[in-house]
Image (cartoon, rainbow, N blue to C red; front, side, top):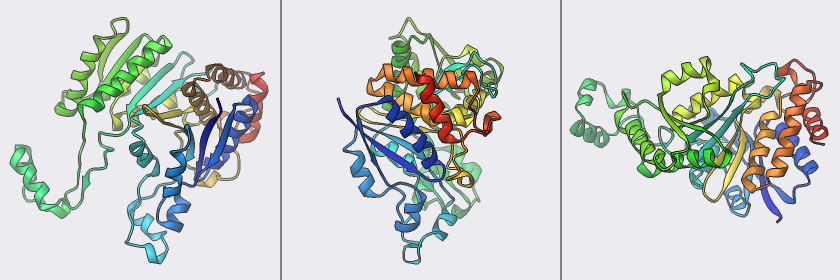
Length: 371
């Protein structure tokens, strides 16, 4: 089967690591056509749209996508970089968040695995996967500032806690809604358990804060308990988000699969990434029922753009995830073996690991080690 894969380099070092990915994909001889699309800050500055409609239409014709990195700036700074005829007429939005919503990529999957020989590992026995709900929660995009009168009136009528804000003007108040749905909770939890079943994982831990955020975290916990009953062979546990931040530092080897909501998942997945070497090793997949986008989780690092000095491992591990999702598990294993051997031997290392190799030299060494 010939695949059609979208390549979205984006901003900054996105192009650097995408070039590394292309080296590896060519060496794997995957039967695929690669089509490159426009996305990112440069298109915001030129067109007032960081995610042009032509890119969305292109993605609809592909099987999945690889994404590099994105530059985002606060609202006022974003407006300053627009051409005069667009200033005040358009609002900046995160293109990757928009893609997650457009294609209903509700599962953000973040493997965090320590590869032997990595000098940056916290410890060598870490191998966990974080499932983060990707389209709801605090990232739903339902926010107000200043708060409209009608919104405030409804809140005051339905919640006594709003009395504490009496005397605060609408202009001096901002509200972000943390929206959970039963379906949203169930499908991310189900995805985590199904992954555990497919890959022989033994334990799923739901990470929330139901003792304080009672309604939203409470809904997630209640649904998780119901679903856990369907998977009696898999151990189920619960943890508060603040305690999990401590336990991941103390005993990361005790955890297998963590599943949580959008904001909490964003935070603990970066924490877990640091335990296995930092964002240079942090891959991810934005996965829905019919489409997926795979990306390293590091930023665009503009000061390094075009210098080809950054570690491409996060992108190469994202390629490995993409191959698994496509069903090409032998190729995925071949690639992972090449990555693991390269890290273990340590002959070729980028600057973050204490070496002098370039981004592309690292990719070429992975290719040699795949054989």
